[in-house]
Length: 407
Image 1 (spheres, rainbow, N blue to C red):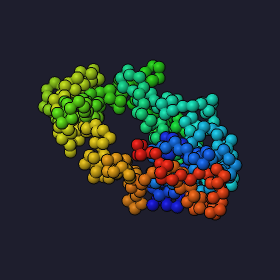
Image 2 (cartoon, rainbow, N blue to C red; image 1 turned 30 degrees about the vertical axis):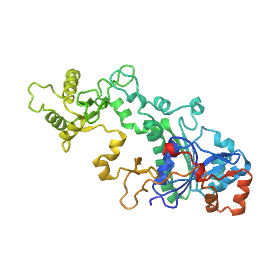
Image 3 (cartoon, rainbow, N blue to C red; image 1 turned 45 degrees about the vertical axis):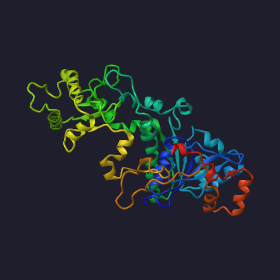
Image 4 (spheres, one colour; image 1 turned 90 degrees about the horizontal axis):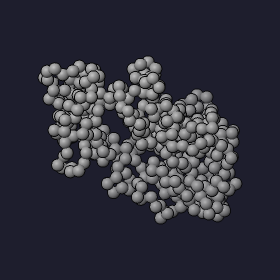
């Protein structure tokens, strides 16, 4: 595995931090999630992307629990914390403490607004808020509609979790030369606008049209479905799927692809059709295309355009995507362990030829690996027993696992 032997400690959080650690685990890192414990009971936030990790319960409100985490961090390669600035410092688990004790430690900090800056640093926020302040949310609009973020995909996961994972990989690569660790300040506001780098450049070059007030002119920009050749079209209701609304995704930007689209729609020989980039025709051409797409079901259109360069493909739901022949051929999805064959999840990506990622592995029972992990990090049986007895750590059993509804 590409990251075999890399030891990662993750203070449990939600969203981007767990995804970053999941990516590292998928490609071979030994990831230990540190859940909170109190009165001998493990308290987990139960993020859905803990596959392949181990889980321990630690009471961070006890000196002994904090000392145990410091001892673990002294032997780890990577430490990930997901809290607002200042929280881990108050616990005595900040980079000043852990990186001094372990100069090779790579310390990943996952926040929304980042470490330092203005009062935003300490403010609460969610994915939508980070996208808004980053400037990227303005790009998620159609026509004169209000901004509409794509769930929490762009901020939490693309701008947050994947950026933190990339930062860890970069730091590991650099450490192989210098022998030194470093701190990674991964902020979703930074990551979101970095992922959108081309859009920011285009907004200043003129390729992305901008209004006088500085906001994107979504009604004129081809990449946000302004023209008829970039749109999601509703299709005829499928009698095999009554009551559902099925769509085809179209993005035939280049002239040769547009020609293939027209051919598939039966307009290849049409006389008097406007030029593809005649903006005055876009609105009524959308109406024309919409009426044509309504004459066949989505799957019928998918068959018509399959194997062509028309840039027209079916909009699939999650289950359809997982079972689509292309996904199956590529191994894009895999069964969820413990799901009885009915559940699925995306497989690790990208696909490495010699050291591919793990097939999805089971999620741990929160806190069930406490004794095992402590032993692997050099704690004696007597030390482990004393920590459990004193309430500094907690060990859960498989019977404590109540996550079956959220596999």
